[in-house]
Image (spheres, rainbow, N blue to C red):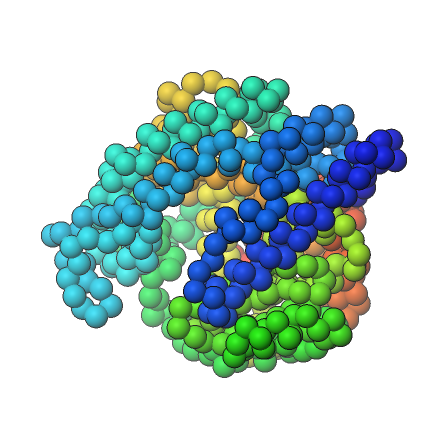
Length: 553
């Protein structure tokens, strides 16, 4: 990865070093403050505005205007690119903070009228209204299709009436601002800024949907019928949460093989065997006070790099997350274990992020260590999550029978293929959305593409709830492709032919190879693919090969 070029003036180099230091220090404060509030529960509030106020240089329009010409002159300089992209995000956020805050607040406060739907809370009380943000959990627990459809219509109508018009207004304003800044071709700008070849990704996405039709539709049709006792032709977006995440009797016996008290032991056995020293670098923490916390994080001699918070406490965020405060010495990994295959899978995913950051070379610049898009670190996260698709690991480490391992793999692989086809369809839609032509007709394209890709009927009105900023969809789509390249490389080079390479996770040389990748921080997607010998981060060949193998277990 390129660093600050010697052709820059001393003044520009000093300016960039100053900006890097401010970004690094702000990130440290954000990570610590969020952990104390969301996980340790030693702070009653999380006030990001107070932290931002300490670093006015990061929000200054002058900072952005000084970075812009440096980026335009040195578009291949990875440090400058990453600093500029973050500064641009801050600049846009500041320009439209009022509009963005209004949308956020509306979503947080939006209530859905559910009278007449006979929906109840966990205590059995009849519900008359629910917050929009809570409806996703409701869908998981509604076995009646008519009731799911009725709830979905009310959610969609409320969102379209109260939020979509404001979203469209902000969408146009942001696009116009980019044009005014000299970037009228949004697809070209984000291709350069992210390192993704978005046009090529769109074509790969289209091909992938076509090439997986034969594998996908018969299996998804059978699965949908098993879950709903109905034909897949009737499947709609309202069914998705229930079909994939609702209670499943056929998986209950497998979930019981993953009790919460087994989580850390399983992680230690896996990662220590790979030579990653998880038992040493990731120590459980449970701070009794802020003083206790401060004494730990200020100890420069502590061997712990990953602060592993597995304690259960009231108000702790339930979803597992990783927040790298500073790499490699202070990484927060928070989980509130509940048990079950999905819970373990989420923890192993986050463990991939944590190991990546914990093995970054000390002293690497903040932009190269922790800035940039999330593609490559997501590929490492998926690598460890996909041990739950590894039959050898499921049988020999997790303790499943051969039949149970095959069942779990087929179920997870089908879910993954649904998600891959969904993101491939979103990729195609967003290229159309940002092609510079009027919005008219594009919601219909959204419905057609997503319905074609997933087999579940999507509605046109749902497009505004399904668009992320900055082509984030490309990060995830490419991360899946890269993870498969990495997994195939590890199986080929570090696994045995008797296991089709699936025992790579038992080879410390594989761990050494991973650590050699991780030491260089947040590689670009092109760099990772090159190191693996594929030389194309959009190559989905390994992904299709591995997915077909797992679907047929």
